Image 1 (tube, rainbow, N blue to C red):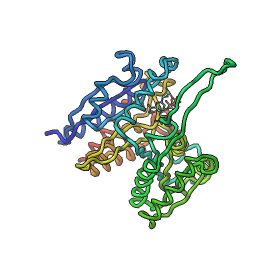
Image 2: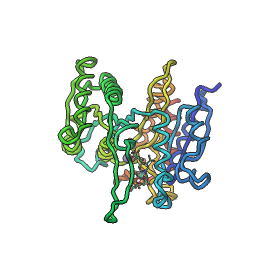
Image 3: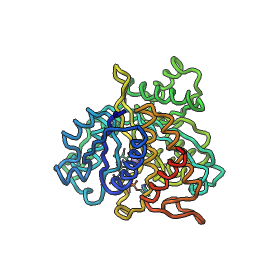
Image 4: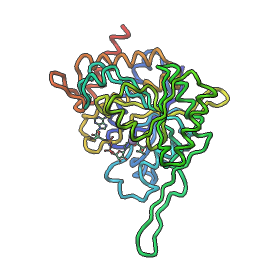
Length: 368
Ligand code: NAD
Ligand code: IPM
Ligand code: MN
C-alpha cells in the first residue's frame, strides 16, 4: 500500500540527472515497504519546449492536488532571452506562490569529511550547522508594481517592489523561532532596517513575536550586509537565520560555499498546515541547472538526495528513514567518494550515477 504521493519535476540541465539518483533512492525505500505513488511532469525550459509555457496549468493542478513535489532545477542559456513570463524561473516562482510555500528551510551542514573542501579554513567550518529560514512568497520577488516603462527621453525605467505585511513577517518569524527551539535556541534576524521601510517593519515584528511568544529564544538583529560578512568571518556564531526572500537567496548561496559546494545544499519549501495538519511542500536542491556541467554525468546528486531526506522528514514523518539516508550520505563521504565539485586529493572521483550507487550500497549496509 502506498504511504504517500510525490510529484517529480526534474526540470532542466542537471535537474533530471540528479533526480534520476533520487528516484533510485525512492525505489530503494519502496522495495523495503515505504512505497510512494510517483508522478512526473515537465517544468521550466522543458515545459516551455513542449507547451510554450514554463508551468502548464495541468502541471500546477497536479502539484496542488498531490501536494508534495520533488523539484530538480530549471533554466539555461537556451531560455535566457525569452519574454519575462516565459522564462523557466517563472515556473518555479509560480509553484512557490500558488502552493503558498512561504517558508524555505535551507540547512547548511558541514560534513566532517568535507571540512577541508570549504573555501574557508577547516577550523572555521568544522561542525557547522546553520538553518537559513528564507521567506519565499513575498518581498521584491512578487511585489507590485514590477514593470519596465519607457521614459520620454528614450530611457527605460525598471521597477521591482519590496513589500512585506505584518502577517507575512509574523508567520516566517514563528517558523524560525520554532526551529530554533529544536536546535540551539538562537535566532538571527537579517534585514536592512537602516535603509528600508520594510526592514523597519521586519525588525519590529520579529521582536514582537519574540517578546510575546518566544521570549526564551535568544534573538539578535543583524543588518543583512553585515550578516553576509559574519557568515564568512565566523559562521559558527549562527544557529537559525530568519530573513526575507532576496536576502535569503543570497545568504544561502554564501552559506552553501561554507559547506564545500552548492551541490551539497538541500531545501524544503513549506506551506501553512491545513485543518488536517497537512502542509503543501516542495523539496529542491539550492543549486540551479548548472549549464556549464549539464549532460556530462558529473553533477553532485547529494543536494537533491538530501532534499529527498527532508521530504521524508517533513512531509511523511519518516524521521528514521531520513536519518538513515543522512547517515548513508555521511558514510559515503567518509569513505572518500567525491563528485568533481567536492573532489579532494586522495579521494575517489565518481560520476553522478556512481555516487547514487554508493548511496544505495551504504543504505544496504545500514539496513543489514
Ligand atoms: P547554478 O547553481 O546552476 O551553478 C553555479 C555553479 O555551481 C556552476 O559552476 C555549477 O556547475 C555549480 N554547481 C551547481 N550545482 C552543482 C551540482 N549539483 N554539482 C556540481 N556542481 C554544481 O547557478 P547559475 O549558474 O547561476 O544558474 C544557472 C541557471 O540555473 C540559471 O538559469 C538560473 O536561473 C538557474 N537557477 C535555477 C535554480 C532552481 O531551479 N532552483 C536555482 C538557481 C539557479
Ligand atoms: C533559488 C534560485 C531561484 C530564486 C531562481 C531560480 C528563481 O536562485 O531557488 O535559490 O532566486 O529563488
Ligand atoms: Mn538562489
